[in-house]
Length: 100
Ligand SMILES: [Zn+2]
Image (tube, rainbow, N blue to C red):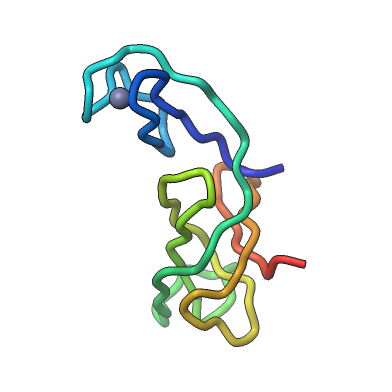
């Protein structure tokens, strides 16, 4: 299961969270789709992490193929900018894995 993406019906702008109105055109109408594939456009490592998380914790930003960007926990052995990835959601956290 991917992540929900809210697409403005008037102008097509994509948002990772539901909005009252589109920031670009003001329309209140959105289509919802499930997005999962995209490319890794940024990542970082966090070394001070809570017990229960792997250290270092790697976080990445994915530019989804359907538009919009999401942040998630990276599950890639050797992440590189531009890697093709799949985003899944579990317990309100996004996880980024290699695309098949
Ligand atoms: Zn719009």
